[in-house]
Image (tube, rainbow, N blue to C red):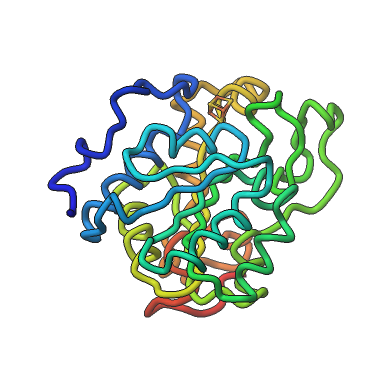
Length: 259
Ligand code: SF4
């Protein structure tokens, strides 16, 4: 039976979630709950699968079936559920380290195989839970626990990665715009094959503190850097390079080049 409101999806036995003050994961968790309600999914027919990391805690607090798996292995476990129980909507939730480093091979092959999964990647560009190590999405020059003089490697563009691997629906949102994010999650959940949403989110503890940014300034910075795709396309090229387009990048009306 579909939920009447998102509060029905709070798993009260476990509440409250353990996120640091100012973390974006709570906003993402709320957006997931509201998207499940708004798309009319029956929560008893939704399976949430996570690996390890702060984002991997999100399913624990949502009253759907949940599976917590080893680091990087959420997608193969989710694939097993989706292929044996096609009546379930299977959602994978993880961070950039979990899904694109340890689990990176699973991610590209799930996209290539068009597995019926929705993968939500909370990208804060760091390993948050384990102490602020460089992840595959940490920007060049950023100082981290494992790169005290600054990261010297190129980061993944996760949306381009999964689109290149064949994903049918690709979107990027941010916790700074929770209503727009909710809409993107709803569209991803309505896509019949593999869908991917990158969710840009701050980690005030491992990134903000190192940069001397307050949680509010961290959110503000993220908000200033991100621009809706239609507007991003109208910007001069040098400004486009400094901004990050958000919206439906593949599988929507505005599909087209964004890199
Ligand atoms: S370490 Fe970072 S990602 Fe993890 S809960 Fe704290 S703020 Fe959020």
